[in-house]
Length: 267
Ligand code: T3D
Image 1 (cartoon, helix red, strand yellow):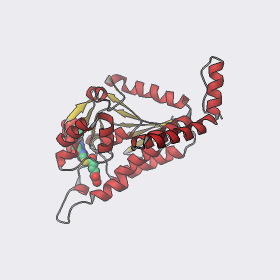
Image 2 (tube, helix red, strand yellow):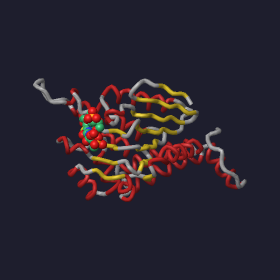
Image 3 (cartoon, protein in one colour):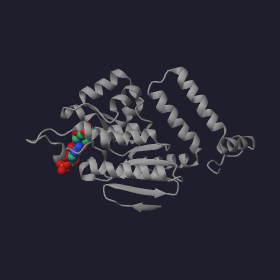
Image 4 (cartoon, helix red, strand yellow):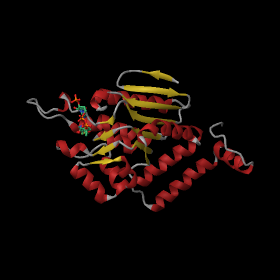
């Protein structure tokens, strides 16, 4: 494992996966534009590494991510109000777009509070695993904003309109167990078990057929965008054609017939 430490984004590189750590623990890993630029660059670098098969996103210290840093940059002043449309579009939403468009499975390992855009980043990931003490807060309304970073999209699809609206409009925190019960996240685990459970999960992705993972991401992107069944069936057939021509499929069938575990990603 190698570790780059550019400061607020730590990149822990393992042979076939990377852990990206949001690292501003004194502010519960609140983000600003330069930090998000570095996060985007770290995602792009993992994407460009053909050997990389999965990414873990987590936070340093007791928080996962407290959303946009509420500092001078976003504080309205005599010079005027900040341009939040540009800020969201160029930075926060680029993170969400990249996670969703990536060929790589993303695991959010939510070690503590995920608030505002921080909750959006977690929910954009393919699998969300959270420490039992972690909380999810649609904090936007508390400061007079609307939920961005994909929050209205993800919440209404994951937990339904009634709960999504209540969380967004009230800004109440929910704990990880409630989030699991509501289907917002994959699993809540004991705090002490989070790191180990995350590593066990990412190792499964390392062994999984990478082409099939990328195909699934394309399919879920289309399905969750609200594609009609007919076009989704066409897309599934096309993706299955790609998967069916892959070395991983040949290996998977052989392994099944030979009653042994498959060795994917060799071809
Ligand atoms: O263009 C755009 O669209 C902009 C993008 C907007 C997207 C957004 O994310 S808007 C939402 C921004 N985030 C928030 O409103 C959350 C603010 N934070 C909180 O509400 C609370 O901190 C939490 C509920 C997350 C956690 O509460 P708690 O009691 O566990 O911790 P704390 O004591 O409030 O915070 C600990 C420290 O982190 C504290 O600093 P201190 O007093 O110890 O020096 C606090 O100020 C700092 N901190 C927490 N969140 C932020 C922050 N500092 C700057 N920015 C933050 N977002």
